[in-house]
Length: 372
Image (cartoon, rainbow, N blue to C red; front, side, top):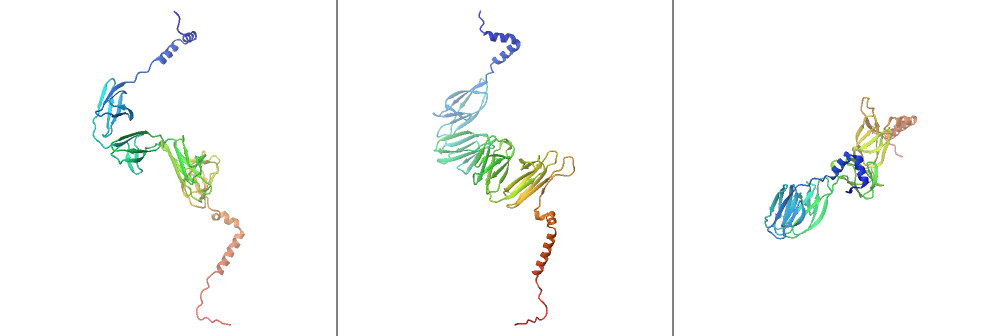
């Protein structure tokens, strides 16, 4: 009898021996069929629509094979309240759903994934999800769906009395998303030190964790925001840019130093400076290899300059590292030393000026004045 296998395949099998036979057997083994049961769905009302696990599957009566486990069956027909039941499907068994309806004026129903969200209807009324609203006002309505760590979704519907409207939505995850807005628009955005675009800006694929966002536009103070997207939260920055601002300078004295703002890295090296930063309080940290970190909460005014110098202490030494505020030039002892003799002359001149402007006391007794 002729061998049905090609020659090259037969040779490979002979060379591979038992190992080849095992591999072929494993690859050819069919996967176990999924256990299913039967669900029979009936309705006394003609035209009843049927949803299984929030998906429209047709009109009753319906017979469906479903995987073993819990399922949601929903039936709805105009003029009656919807009929919803949980059905536990068992392997090789039949479950029957015989709907009974109660007359109703119509409903609006929302089911959303992920759970735990809310519905905002017409911009004012709010309900936790899932929700069924009986007999709402006829006409057009706007709706907005919100859920934790998910992108909101908006839409519009038109309700007529007796109708049953059903909406099932899967909201997109907010994980990795960033939204940056500024007033005015057209500001440059730096995310963790890297230029990423201009406002209005929407980003995706950003790693979860702590981030620092800098929003910069010529003629305005730099807006600095710390954003934590841990746990899948969306990064959102709203920056109304301010005119003016104060200069901020951080000197580390160490080329390997790292400078953090709000827990996120914003610069490295011996110095980091901003020409103008908006008024506020900022958590600053400076670290360097082999040194203890230095931390401070800096208060930046609406104008002027704020400067800090890092005094970093080695890990094995006593004491703590610190960020020391640099004093203005006229407050430093070295400034007055540099004045030298000129300073003495200035002081003497100051005394003379003081004497010239000194108030002369009124003399006691009579005063004789000779008139021309």
